[in-house]
Image 1 (spheres, rainbow, N blue to C red):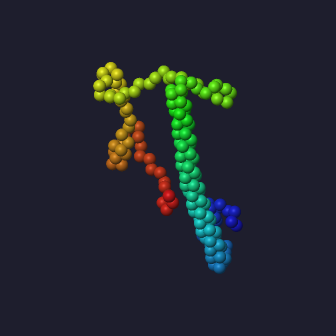
Image 2: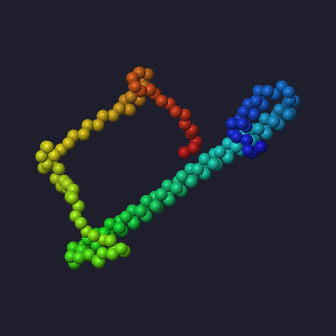
Image 3: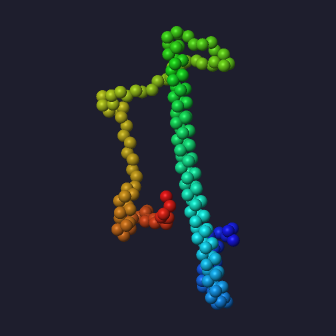
Length: 164
């Protein structure tokens, strides 16, 4: 009966415990013991599967870190290569011949503002940003103290302990 779902085993166990009128005591105990063993085995399998999923996630995170490092190394290599070509152009004044396999050209950007001393900027070059957002800590404290806060409610969620 290993293909039963956990909920089905629990349901059968509850029914067996509440409806034992048609069985003798030995049949009843044997059925309850069998269902209890199935239940424990299924619970263990659920926990093992959960651990397997957690391990898979951890391995994937480590692989992602490796891939992110690899991407960073390759991106840095591209930037160094571009800077090398610019340096060669600045020294020699010319680029390698343009071809289908070497479509390199150099141009200047439109420029960007480099603010090296923000304290010496005039006031009209500053902008003010005001960010308003709910003070969740205060709201939570008031809700826990039993106060009613319009537009907010205390939300409680179930959680599992014993698993990461």
